[in-house]
Image (tube, rainbow, N blue to C red):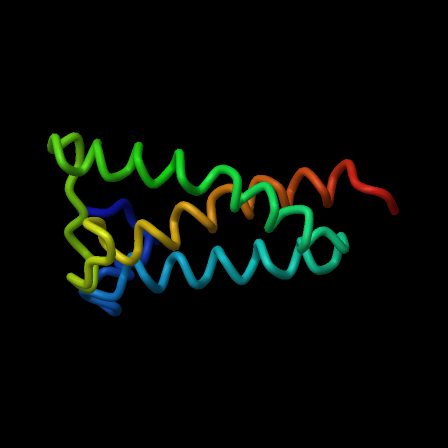
Length: 105
């Protein structure tokens, strides 16, 4: 049960909940990176991190560290498509905040 005032987006999006959250937070990351003129730099960093994140994610899912319930069920290269997005969105959001706070004005 969710605390009062917290919407249950899972009831709205169902199996697309994880995907919808990735799109929403990815849009925030994109907007901030665009505003900071850091899309290319962030892309290079994310591309360098992605293979490590993929292996880590594949391994933890394979051994059962966690399960993802509200997802589309579409897998790509052995992991949910939402996890591929997660491995792009999370570092993008971190880099977006970093660039916004510390980048050139």
